[in-house]
Image (tube, rainbow, N blue to C red):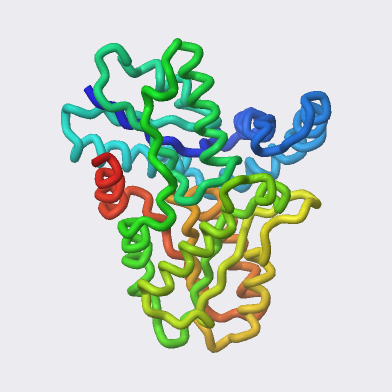
Length: 313
């Protein structure tokens, strides 16, 4: 039996404040996310951030929650089911969240390493950042150590930000929305500038390369494309320009139709549906913009399924 672990960032169990707070605590206590010594991190997260933010974040999650649950969990399960169907009985496809359940620890315990063939770990983040891919790999290694399995037993799929299949899949979702008067905004998840400087791999440059490859594939002029970074929090300097600032400037050209795509997200989630599709749209229209459209993520699109299967070969 071969195993494929699909790794996502994670999601609260429910949109209620207590569950959102539990999720935020686990997320923000990760040293890859907030790099502070333990006592200071405990005070900042457990006393300063979570008690306040769990209520505001809960309200945001309630806006996007579905009858089936969190959109991120729903889309990831749909992707898992499609991959399982196409890979057949020789593979078992497992979902693992970095934060929340089903956890990476839960996933590795489902694997019979003694009789396993290939064991593949796929972080579903197109670009590498220490706070996402790096943290997931670190957690995977910790969980493997607990069950006395060497990390070398697991193949880790590299970030796919410049893979032909990924660029082609993105282009296919965007192409029908591009017109002569369209401005394409590519909104990537931001990271603090300090994390970018510490990393051996430049997240910023990976994002720029995705933009360049997608722009070339679509055949649109570079002056009709903007790269920006969303989800900025706190007072530290983050990658620029921010998506909000970029959108404010673009709203001053009312003859343009703004189309937004989020190439650092594979599945739609709070950061795409609420932050971009609701908050950013309202900001753009209030700033004078006339037409705003958000392109959904690949989610469980067949092109994503085919691309992942290609990575397994």
